[in-house]
Amino acid sequence: MAIRQMTLEDIERVSELCLTSFMGAVAGTLSDEGVATFTNIASIEAFKKRMQENNTWFVYECTAENTTSSELVYQTCPVEKRIMGVLELKENKHISMLFVCPSAQRQGVGRALIAAACQHVWQDQTQVQTGSLQVDNPQVDSPQVDNPQGNSLQGDRVSQCEPLTVSASLTSVPAYLRYGFKVAGEIAESEGLTFRPMTLDLRMDMKIDIGIDVSTDTDVSM
Image (cartoon, rainbow, N blue to C red; front, side, top):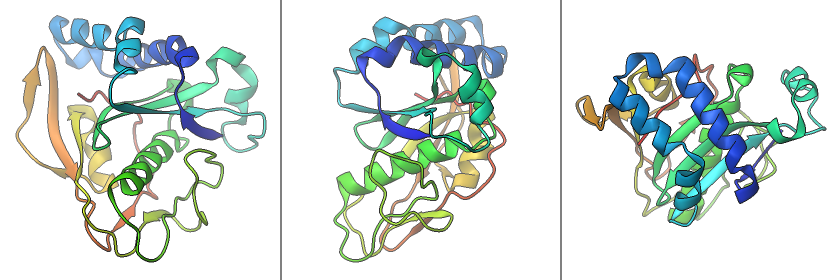
């Protein structure tokens, strides 16, 4: 497996992945307005537009080197469908989208994407004075991970870092709580999409424990 940044060539597959996951796990909890809103957000045209903005995209891709639990997924999916997860990071501080292909859920894809986003935020917003950032995913190729040991992403003596935020769909709140996020506001709604504001405080000398089993990797964020 490899985590890399999304390219224009990936957009069609990523759009399909997001819409498929959304329709299967989230659409039934929303109004027709909410479904229409998300359909527009996840359209190919909307993805192309947002790629011109100050957003960072991570995709989780099957590779031929994979021999772990997702090997069957790799062997049975065509080349253009080997992207199994996507995370959109807005302004290097807000998770605005996180989806995993239904066939690849419960295999650590969402966990790895969260880890990559956290590392990216730490590297962008902080100065690491001692130690290194570590992620429990030795198969992540990009961004670079130093010494992937243990079940955590951790930094030592960092400063000047804003919290990582997410407007989590109600079905994804328990997963974010297990990642260490905290509820930061009341349930809200925008254009038919219902969500709960949550934050992850990236404070000095903290440790982000991401070594947990997530019940679902499907999320709708804004």
